[in-house]
Image 1 (cartoon, rainbow, N blue to C red):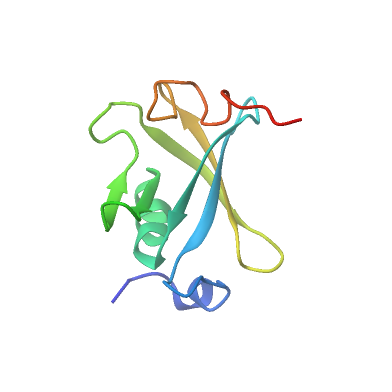
Image 2 (cartoon, rainbow, N blue to C red):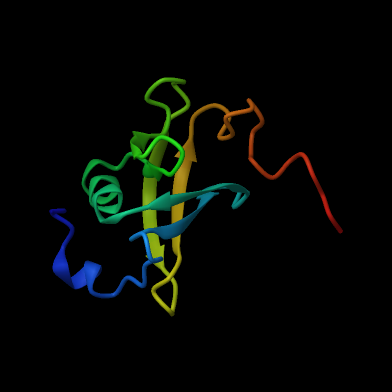
Length: 112
């Protein structure tokens, strides 16, 4: 069971598998860096450690951004949208945010 504050947990609207999308934005430039998923434990750890912590759907486990790459995210603020179904995570990003080595995960393909 997660140690997430029940007052916060009760406001979350999760997917069927217990996840909430988290849009990660640079706190200074406001560039959108990436999108990831959080479960209650990932959100709890993010709020208590100040490090971006997410749920990896492909690996089926929690991961701390930068734990292996060194490209850490120091979390300044976490906001919940009006419906409780999306988180906005404002961070100070150290190094590239994308696993491809790009500064953001949204640099490559512009559709419009």
